[in-house]
Image (cartoon, rainbow, N blue to C red):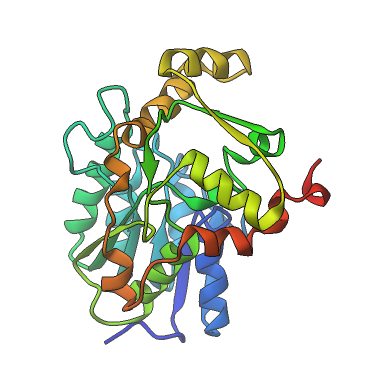
Length: 286
């Protein structure tokens, strides 16, 4: 039976890009939702297992987002299963099952694989979401401030990506939490077409009137530039490595997860840009 709207849903990472949209969609269905994060309605800390049980108590289904560096996800998943959670939906990442997808420098793959394996071993209804690069990075994430400044410098070369709308990720997550037919599924998620960064910026200009140019930066220089802005070298190298699939063209592959999960096509980048157009207009600038 599907988990019903009368059950309590937990969203771990409920203030993030995908989590807050999952929260909104569940509440639009009149579902009861517990938002868990360090700053959310329910205090939750991956490094403090004393916060886990209160977050999980009485929960029927959970959507789980964890930072790459967190190693405690398997223990949390085991506790969730012990406490009777019936549905677990885990946000993973595209390409974690493909050797060399991110090159040798990206250290997050091992954690994603470990989390996925732990989820499968819980014995409850599980679903794994593997999205590619978020379209929302342009409107509210890492790319946003440079775009407002007129120049986006990335170690993405001339590569392209099928940027996925986080609203699609949330729709798939909610379907997996509330409907039958998604248990045991791994959904690879992307947009319906691949765009270069320059093409994405051109779409943004068309809908918002704001112009920004893309500058392809060699990875080593990209790391040095981020370090010069105050980033730790480890974080800068992580970003450069995360962009490797865009540089190498691996993110151009169109995934079918949205269609399989929802029975519709994924949201096109231009639809995302129209909805987010105010993010790049003058009144939105600091």
